[in-house]
Image (cartoon, rainbow, N blue to C red; front, side, top):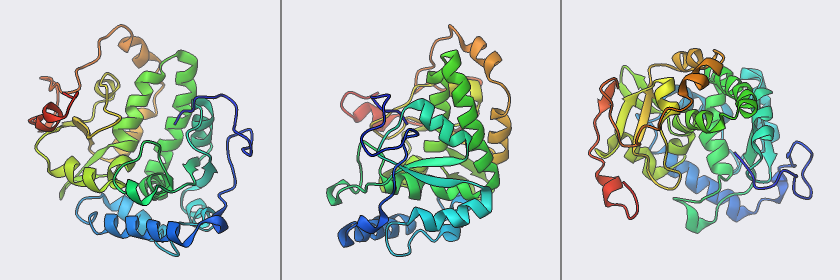
Length: 287
């Protein structure tokens, strides 16, 4: 989401976009996508939310290995007016938010190495396209992402990006959805990760708490390990409704308030699972 430099690297346009270069992918890279796709989709039924699974079907992300953005954008534009644009890696916040506000999702175009099937530090095309793009076929979630981009541009002006980043992390990347069938995953950081798909729903360690906007904005997160807390939205529409208002008053209320410890369960929380925090306590330097 952010980059160390404010200037696009050589070959990138002023908005940080580049050509995907789909014809340049090797047979081994296409096969790696197939391996990741088949391993992950075998795990997702009964775990991923219906809008994500419908998006996978609509975009046909399995065909011919790594998807050609030009192909999937035709269907994505038809469904919700969004498109995927290739970027060389992490981009500055302003460029990121401007893309989202204009219904463009910036995606890395490189794919991880075979020895990085389960983890890599910088998001690759599998995380960005498999993880994020299927949800953009859902009109409500597509509107939420645009609203988030617009809110990000305002947050930059107000100096409140740290609060807004937590909202993205705990929804777009690591969100859970309440359904009549039980909790389901929709966050890209979960649906694109074999291990976290299991951990997020089945492990007794993390807390699973009802989504509350102010609560989320006061909660730090883990960037390099499984989450200690997941927030559960009651519906995609509820998520959109919570973020359509101007956050100015909320930011003012949060000013000066302390962060809520990541492992905390408050008396006011809606508790789906009170976790043991065993994983975080056992991990070196965690908990």
